[in-house]
Length: 578
Image (cartoon, rainbow, N blue to C red; front, side):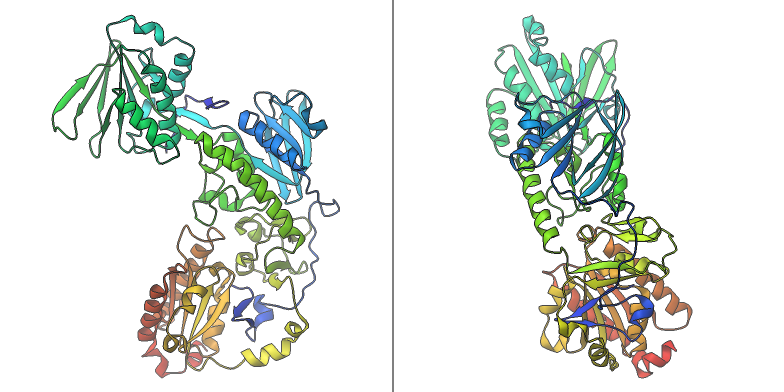
């Protein structure tokens, strides 16, 4: 892959505003636990509060062909670009009227900030350069790690990694070996269980050159052919028709013996169940394709990147393209685990579209809810900074939430030990401000009903599909994320007369806030343990992960909770908690 680097190193692969229908649920103790829907003052200071935000400048990390194409495409859309790359980017002569600033051989050392105000420190040959931009796009070429150690061989003239072999082939160095009667070249691809379409595309690049030489026989040893991309299956068929032999192994992979300059592949044909030995003239090994280590400063801005590293995008269908968990930061190609060259061109257009979408959302207020900090309560414990999956919180004299970056998930609200954070609606009508009216409506005890906190991305939709008879037994409370449900929400529901409490979040790996569902499950497990230690029925609490299209999972959980609470509801639930 152009611009890619080959490395020889080793690699071992409780709170928040809650909605019931169109209404908001507030407990009688909402103020004490941070649950509020009334307008709040935002007095926290941002580290760069005085600076105006700039949504016209984009930092592009990546100076290879893809990074250059992205920079030029962004300029066409009216953005100015700071391009940091190695080697020096090459642009068209007019250089887009100076809208592209190139920092050749630059290395990003540190970056912090939020949408519209990212501050980057770039190391250059002339010293450290500071840049302020509105958005960040990570578009660097991949780091390539040969799999010599994984296959138990050492690099030599007869054992090459795929990238080196392709370079030699394109330079004509391999053709000189074709003077022999026949040249046998074996390719290993994903025998360790890790392969992708980019690897097979590169193997087919090699075979396309080799099949034009009559005295070359190619072999491909793999576990799973990865050809499910446009044009790849046709290239595979063309290679087979030209005489390339493919071996697919489900269990025992081939063994490689390397002694005194002789390489031997020992294997059992999976179809013939017969043992064979092959002594190829050249053994070509596939490689691990990884994001470069230089994206680490960007990862450090996003607390939830611990769940996605070495990539920037979470392994979730909620983040299917170039968007990351942090607003204003985008991952193109290798940074999100995509290495197939044609897909990188699609990523460029996705970045452009996502930038425009984010600017529009910023102009119209973003998510329905936003976290607000009461600075007088904030003790700068940094819990919110560490746990915000979207990297939306900074701090100076107190924690500060960036409204353009906040996704309104409410995780920070339930995690804050000082109850210094609350969720507030961005847009309100006059009727919504009648707090006393809402309090009267919500203050009635639950009268033995089950209370279900439902994530708006999954549980709420599943609840809508339940039978009316089952819905009648449950008081639903829709929350922006299951991670917004704190311990006090659950306890208050029991004090208000609920016979049991259910929290329904997304499946692990499908949470829009990355780990909100995990935090909710953890908190409920702690509460169950506390109830058990107090001699109470811990089965009055249940956490269930599900999807929008799985109402049967929610129905089963409700029925289980009803059975579990039959005995405990003989006494007053509120009295049991007193």
